[in-house]
Image (cartoon, rainbow, N blue to C red; front, side, top):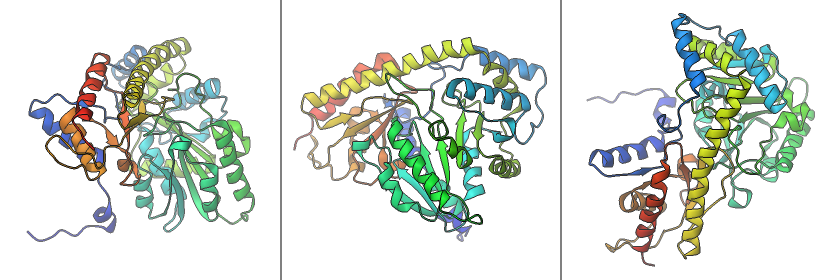
Amino acid sequence: MPSQKLSQLAETLIGSEIVKLGADIKAKMLQGEKIYNFTIGDFDSAIFPIPKELENEIVNAYRKLNTTYPPADGIVELRTAVAAFIQTREGLQYNNNEILIAAGGRPLIYAAYRAIVDKGEKVIYAVPSWNNNHYVHFTEGQHIVIESKKENNFMPAAEEIKPHLKGASLLALCSPLNPTGTTFSKDELEAICDMVIEENAQRGADEKKLYLLYDQIYWTLTYGDTIHYNPVSLRPAMKEYTIFIDGISKAFAATGVRVGWALGPEVLINKMKAINSHLGAWAPMAEQKATAIYLLQANEVDAYFNHFKSEIAERLQRIYEGFQQLKKEGFTVDAIAPQAAIYLTIQIDLVDKTTAAGKVLTDQAEVTAYLLDEAKLAIVPFTAFGASAKSNWYRLSVGTCKKDEIDEMLKKLKAALQKLSK
C-alpha cells in the first residue's frame, strides 16, 4: 500500500504515552489479571459521582429542551455564576466579558496558545507537566523546557525561569500540578510574578507582552495545611497578563460533563472566543444551564467538597504512609507528602536490580514493565510528562482507587520488591 503523506504537524505529533500504557493494562485485564490501575487522571463515577444536585439540574435542563447552540463565549447565566463563584472563593474579580466558557480546559488552553504564540516564539514550561509539549508543537513555538527538581517538589523555581524570559511570549504554569499534586509556595509564585511584571515593563508599546497561562483546574482540591495561591491575588498587576484555566472537571469529579472556563484580559478572551467558535468546542447548553445554577448553591457545594476531599485525602495519605514504611524497611522507594489534586508523587528506583528470573532491569521503562508484570501495579512514569528518560519518579492517581485495595496493593508491591537482588 502506498504511503499516505500527511501534514508536517500530523507526521511529527507524538502520541500519548499514557494511552500506550493503558493499552498494555487493558490487554492484561482482558487476560483475567487483576491490575491495580493508578494511571488514570480521572474518576471512577461509581466511587466519586458528580454532585447529586448538579446531576438533577443537568437532567432538568435537558427536559426543558436546552439542546441548541450556546453563545460562543458561554451563556450569560454561567459567566455570571462563575464570576460570583471565583470572587467568593478566591477573591478574584472578573466581569462577564473577561470570562470564556468551553468544553473543559483543553480547548481553552489550545485557544490561549493559538491566540498568543507565533511560529518560532519562546514558550517556557517545566517538566514534568501535562501536555505543554504538545501545545507548543501545535503552535510551532520554541520549546524552553525546565526540568524541575525534587527539592522544589517538582515545581519550577523563579531562578530557573528568569534566564529565559527575554523574548518569550508565554510562560505556562500549573498549580496544583498535574502530575505531581504539588503546589507553588507564596514566596515562589510572588517572585515569578514580579519577574513577569518587570519583563513586561521593559517591552515597548508595540511589542508583544509576556503572558502567563495559569492552569488551576485542581485548585479546590488541597489538603492539610496546603494553601492555593494565584498570581492575580498576589500581584494585582498580573491581571493584565494572566489567563486562568479552570472549570468543574476535577473540582466536582465531572470530567465528562465538559464545562470549563478561562479568565483573562478582555482583548485576549475575545480572540480566544473567536478561535474556539471555529472549533465548535462549546460546553453543551444543558450542562451550562445546570452548572450556572449549581455553582451558586453554596451550602451544597461546601458539603460536596467536605466529603469529596476527605475521601481523596484519605487515599493519598494511606498510600503515602505505605511508601514511607517501605522506605523505612530499606526498599528504594519514596514519596512526597500529598498536597493537592488526586495525585501522589512516588519514586521507585530499581534500575540495575536483578529479577528472580535473572534479568537485570537496565532502564526505567523496564522497571515500569516489571511493576506491571510482577506487582500488577500500573503507574505513569514522569517521562510521559516530558521528564528525562532516567527519571525514576511516577504519578500515582487515586481517582479510581478503592480503599479496600490499598493494603493489598502495597503488599503486592512489597513482594515484588523482595524478589529483586542487587
